[in-house]
Length: 309
Ligand code: CP
Ligand code: NVA
Image (cartoon, rainbow, N blue to C red; front, side):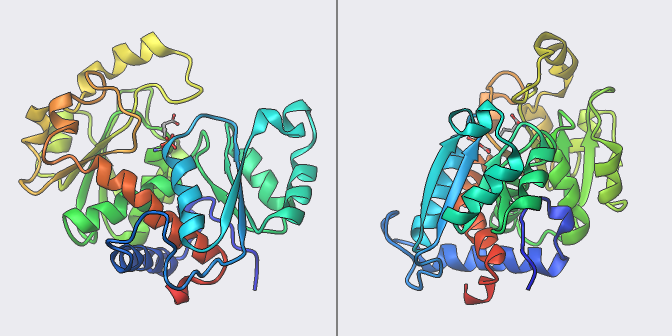
């Protein structure tokens, strides 16, 4: 069996993505009511360790992977990249070889996507992408799980992304053809997603210039911060994105059952109003919670243990 890395949703077989979602829903239901520190009854990752390397800040990814490993019966260790010899110039390859001797899997949040690819090429354990400049597959796994939970089947659904053509949108584009939903993309000129990511959506998207048109009749509205970690052109971005704020007026154009999703952290009054993100149609905290359940499924997939879920 080959080494399984969870780096981009575009590389997953549709049936594997579907199996992860099923496992995430099932495991979440199975442990309902248990204290958060209690392990799942089957402890499928008993004795396994996950290392987490962070080049950037994180709350949800850090906490959810740590708790995921504990609930699966294993453990985790966290390292800030700057504190590793990596931060002083030791090669990614040597870091990957050494950490593979100590732990059973590695999750990395990196500035450059190429670092995660390089690490995976030299690791002898599974590597998971905890966000890069190019993609955020863990977030989208949790978002699509949340959509299924709050709204229903994804096949045939119309999801509207209004805002920056960033890393989170790239993973949403990767998921669309695998799960059968259609994506409406509404970004300012100059902030469109990369052509390579659009190509990976295999035609499952339309570009729409007007936010109101993108929102009309949609099953879900999504956005993200206007300034991602590493972006420098802050004032230019805020000016360009101002007409793309998710307001209650936009939300009211979506279908009555439509939900609002945002990966968090959010900036109320910028990409979304407080009325929407703190309102009844917001599913942002469900999605944050589902990071835990979705990542448990991704970890089990990496270990060829998804069938045990
Ligand atoms: N959504 C998300 O990945 O959050 P963190 O940056 O807090 O991990
Ligand atoms: N697009 C954001 C997501 C944060 C979870 C960023 O990359 O900073």
